[in-house]
Picture 1 (cartoon, rainbow, N blue to C red):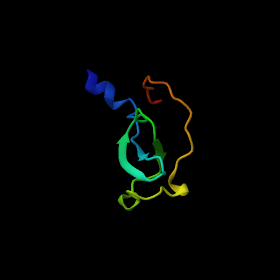
Picture 2 (picture 1 turned 30 degrees about the horizontal axis):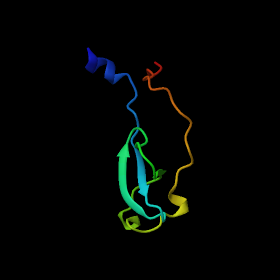
Picture 3 (picture 1 turned 60 degrees about the horizontal axis):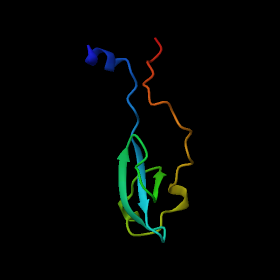
Picture 4 (picture 1 turned 180 degrees about the vertical axis):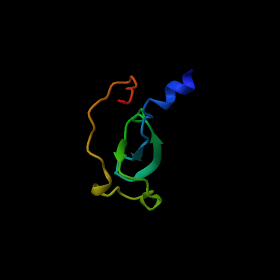
Amino acid sequence: MHFLWSLFTRKPALRQFALLDAQGRCQAFKECCQPPVGEGWVEIEEIRLSWMHHPLPARARVSPRPARSSRHQALAA
């Protein structure tokens, strides 16, 4: 039954994040549904390995998103 219900619910979209050090250099990347816990994580448009250990370009950052409900919303028929 859970499988059938999952066919009609939205899957949370994966988002990309970069961990910045005190100098603003990229130290790690993470792709997940929710923002990572801890200081220094910023949401980015895409992950580029060439950014590792370099300052993150300003164009890479995503503007903050409004908080969403943690409950899944069913698709309209």
